[in-house]
Length: 202
Image (cartoon, rainbow, N blue to C red; front, side, top):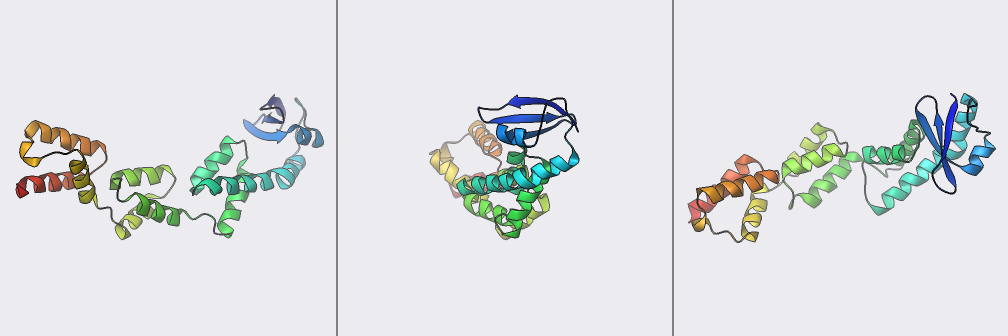
C-alpha cells in the first residue's frame, strides 16, 4: 500500500490516507517514528507494527471509554471505531477483548433495553431500534417473547394523558387517535382492543 496523503485532523493528529481507500489516524510523532511519508509505500511489516504497538491498545482504550457513559452494542462500538479511523483489525481486537471479559453482550443489552423501555415504547419501536443497534431479529423476538411489552397499558396511559373522554369522541376523532397511536408504533390489534374497550365501558 502507498501513502496517498497525510491530512491534519487537529494540532496533534493526522489522517494517513492509503491508496486502498483506507485511512489511519495517528499522532504526528507516530507518523515520524514509522517513517510515513506522502507518496511512499507503507510495508505490510510496518503496518502490522503500527497495529500491534499503537492501534490495538488505543482501540481497546477507546471502547472502554465509550462504555463508561452507557451500554452499547457491538455494532455501535464498531461504528464508533470506524468513524474514529481505526482499521478493522484494531476493531476486531478491541471487540474480542470486551467479549472475553464480558464487557459486552448484545443479548443481555437487548434484555436490559426491553426492560427499561417496555412501559414507554411500543413493541414495534423497540424491535426497530434494537435492529438498528445490530441485534439479530430472531434474538429480539425471543427477548420480546420472554419480556412482552404491554401495549394495551401504554395506550390506556396515552389516552388518559390526553384527557380524552370516550363518550365525547366521534368517528373522526377516533380515527385521528388511532392514527396517532399507529405513528407511535402500536399495533392495530392493540389500538382496536383498547379503543374498543373504552367504548364498551361507557
